[in-house]
Image (cartoon, rainbow, N blue to C red; front, side, top):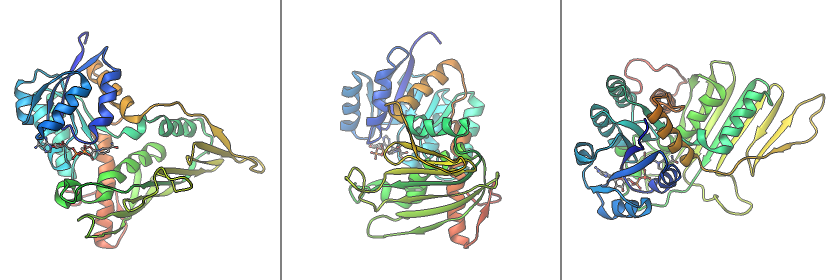
Length: 342
Ligand SMILES: NC(=O)c1ccc[n+]([C@@H]2O[C@H](COP(=O)([O-])OP(=O)(O)OC[C@H]3O[C@@H](n4cnc5c(N)ncnc54)[C@H](O)[C@@H]3O)[C@@H](O)[C@H]2O)c1
């Protein structure tokens, strides 16, 4: 494609603030020509930040009239599947924010629609594009820890939104914190450790704060035999406070060393005797801007994205297995079968 990719932004709420710089940095090869949001003020604010774009209040009108090659879906989770399927049927390439959908039935409908229309479906698992998480991947590939044995990933946040926000509604979110944000860690787990074989799940709810779980713990076993756990805590006011705990921690140990990313990446190589952690420099940059650039390049060149729809489905499947485990009180083997995950 020689011309710039024409993008329609669908949903112009909170996360759009992270997407817009990505488009502004790629103006040589992409332009946001249309913005749809049910809230006029949100769409207008996005247009101002982007420097243009036709506004729509209904996403269907954007698909019908907004001469776009691709859409970027930044909507509540219950809208991911209907909007993505309609976009595919209209022949548009699709970037959808995580999680791909609320369950595997919806995810499969999106994958099938994208396959039928031969359009690209990418899930915005932005951590894979973030310089720090991406550097950890290259360190693993360089073999600094040897064969991974134990992978521990943490995600701590405190969600401050109006009580009526969709994020606190189990039906619209598709669950709670595990569905919404631990899918980032599940995606990284698979990237770092390979396929997951078995999943457990435990959670805590605080009905006065949200309908779905506010804390979730998912122990895992990989097909390689390595083990790990992913933990999300949405009731942790620590981010940005001096002396406080981490926001997102990766802590990996392997046959030949270990590494963690608390205040930078630190690697300990085991020789006869481990002596000191090396600090590994990391480039500046955000995951979202790089994810947007990757989507634009894949759509223009017909390439498969790193975090394609199937990768998004695989991260979702781990979340569904964690929920199933909590319901049954047993570990759950992947792939999910029958109605599990539907
Ligand atoms: N990758 C990340 O780190 C990250 C962080 C936050 C959110 N997200 C994801 O981004 C997506 C959006 O989350 P958000 O935090 O921006 O939510 P938000 O509530 O801030 O924004 C959603 C927007 O969608 C609009 N909207 C809702 N229904 C609509 C409809 N029927 N038609 C048109 N517009 C409609 C709302 O008016 C709102 O402006 C979710 O998938 C969420 O999980 C990702």
